[in-house]
View 1 (cartoon, rainbow, N blue to C red):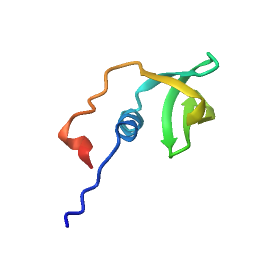
View 2 (cartoon, rainbow, N blue to C red; view 1 turned 135 degrees about the vertical axis):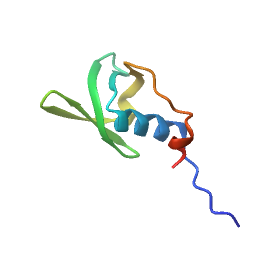
View 3 (cartoon, rainbow, N blue to C red; view 1 turned 60 degrees about the horizontal axis):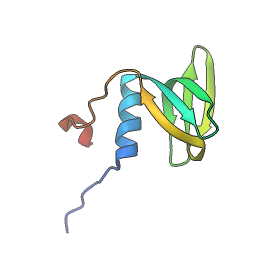
View 4 (tube, helix red, strand yellow; view 1 turned 60 degrees about the vertical axis):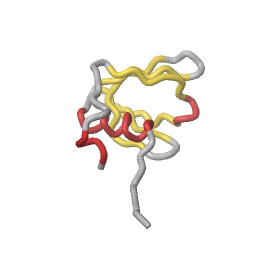
Length: 80
């Protein structure tokens, strides 16, 4: 049996944004707009850094994450 590691799109997207330190705009389900850089994430939350402040954002509160620049999600180097 081959032991293949599969990554879901959410993890690839968030990890790419984190590694490249791409600024993102996050829209919450209640309409609030947050901006910053994703510095950490897990299955339930993410840490958003802006200037010297960090915000812990729960994923269930997020509607949309919009990067401020294009992300190369389908590069061979992102398959790790």
